[in-house]
Image 1 (cartoon, protein in one colour):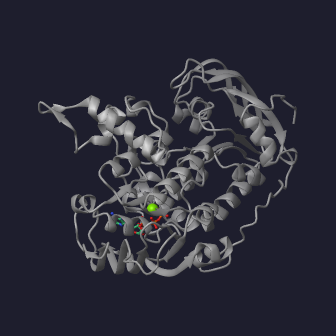
Image 2 (cartoon, protein in one colour):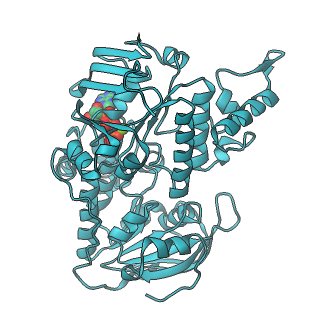
Image 3 (tube, protein in one colour):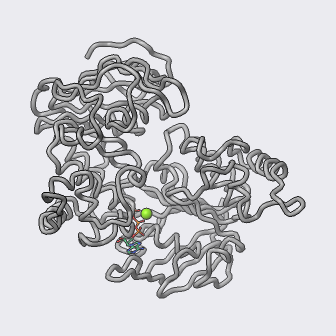
Length: 512
Ligand SMILES: Nc1ncnc2c1ncn2[C@@H]1O[C@H](COP(=O)(O)OP(=O)(O)OP(=O)(O)O)[C@@H](O)[C@H]1O
Ligand SMILES: [Mg+2]
């Protein structure tokens, strides 16, 4: 598959990059052979995204040498990188939502007719490219109307349309549902088969094991290991990443205490959809103090709308949401927070953070009114709060004044969780809580969620990862077509059983 004697498609040696006080990359080496799928792994903040950005010309480097297909390209620009066939698919999409798929794909390289965009040609080109690669997206649809998985395919098409032969993907599956992940793997394998070189960052060890040929591991800005995938195990890989042994076994820890009173109650809830008239079609559910209730389901079955309705971002059509016995249908998101509802949103950039604000300010977002009086903020209290959260959650770098924009993805996620779990709450809605965090931090976040449960909180967990649902939940509800098709005790569930309900094969509701 790969030829180790060939000139590497990418060779980076002795790369260093500093941002003010932070040495993001120090002495990193990376060598990728043509036509291989290569993973770049490492803890949150290890320098993976920075190294990728240096490779695609978005960031310069302070030291080191970069060669692409044997040619020295150190210090090049994104324009030159693209011209040389190196293209990056970003973790956070960079598409124009008001344009069509075809327009986005050809942006900057538009086919012209009488000096204007030739839309028919663009559509034809994009459809042709879709056929070649197996990436399927409706070329005439508006990007704003696409699902996350489709938007990602547009990003990939855009890079390929510019002639990329080296494709860089930064955590491409973090935002995808399991079937979309399977689709993406097919596409990447097809691309590899046609000679494209693929370098990807991911925290999911099973993906690395299944898909890649080789793995480069970074720790604290340095390359610490290069592994041949067939000769390694997830345990070896995890240990190389964090520098200690990691327990990767999936263990379901039963709750220590007993279930308490119902704290969150849904009664015949109906909610309008983003794209359809009714996305939640009559849901009733009781969530009790001292339990983690997991909601499983294939993305697009109403999860997004349910979360928005619960947190006050989307009005309900009918039915009732009660918190501690009080109807909260009409409360604003902030009032719900004060009433005891905490929320880890699924999209940290859209809903969870203000990127230009400091870590300290993001740690009190939505709760500023508790940190000061008469409209004046108590900076000392905010900073003390930040110091405590940074220490408790190992947020790096440990600087309350750093703009959140400068933190690595996983550390941004820790800021969101730290904020939502530090407040006084009785119900925590946790949507994709470990998205983008490394194996060590996943362990840590899972422990904290269990501790909250054991302290008598109710946790409503929504996750695209069945394994996470099975590891954490005491009861599991399956959302399918806007309805709960099953509510089962954890012990009655397995991946296969849940999978059946998730695809609409099983349809009985059993009391739990
Ligand atoms: N623009 C920037 N300004 C200041 N510091 C930065 C900037 N970009 C990255 N850093 C810092 O560089 C270090 C490496 O960050 P990077 O984003 O490369 O990590 P990562 O390995 O991709 O982590 P994750 O798995 O969490 O995405 C981090 O400490 C981060 O805070
Ligand atoms: Mg990153």
